Length: 412
Image (cartoon, rainbow, N blue to C red):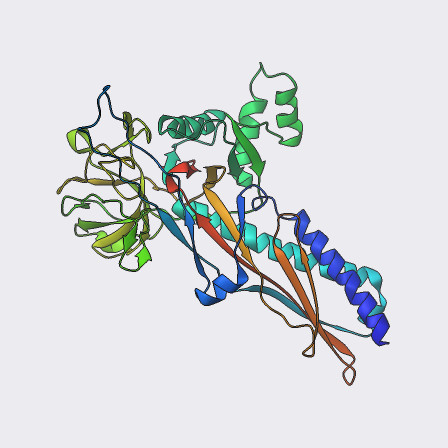
């Protein structure tokens, strides 16, 4: 009986791996990093990943009187989430049916893979610094606007970019295409099968994930409390500085209604904080958008991106001026459509050390996208049941907030 149980559970594990591979739509499209197991244990499951370097230019033949660009190693903290698991029991009667085993394994793989995709989706939804909105339904032009915004900031040339569409906005794009008369078979596919081609240079995918960014509450009268900008540094004390974020002190009677994830711009007219081209430093003419990362409901908001107005990492035309009005963009609760340049978002994967000689049997494998998978099981001959556990360990991180963002349709 023991040999038969082992053989049956190996079938289950095989289906688990295949089910996992089949469900990784979003996590297959992001960059992957395999963290060192030993280093992760010693660092309490936190590791640091480098951001891109940037350099300032100098004019002239003789530059001996100029100052060299400070070489600053910017690093981003990445934290493993608590392990995700699927657990269930199978008795000796149930394990007689190979189909039952195969479907159980497939469902376990799909559940864990979907959880990874969902976590990655929500990470981009809350961290993406480019926020494109419209008061109408999602259209083809909206994707082009998102690409134009990143191009104006100096998006990496020749680098793949991705757009994940939620089911409802995907439907609206298909309708938009289906109504057009000049795209030939594209229109027919959109009309008959809700199939849309890549949008404005984005490799476009439809996802069953759905993350609704809640509408901002009553926040009228919110202003910047003090002049604010951020100085890039390599270290803060003994730890690398997280230069993706900065603190913005706000004032107003309604600041208690500000939520984590809210999107906003700062100022108008002469006080408007615009984005710049990250290489040349030229004003894009577009308001820089910011996200509330933490500190919601207080006067001290942790925002992303940090406001950097000098040096090679300059991203804004000017500081946030005291008294400048804050205007929020997420005016209606709607599902997000995340987009990013490849490399700006990363899935970090790790592996727990399940011993194979201390009772339960353990099987391990790697998915097609490099995620280590573990299955452990224990058979109790007195109850006639096998207890099965499936486990994965991972981190979802936005390394470059200004190279990713979200599109929100149907805002008020």
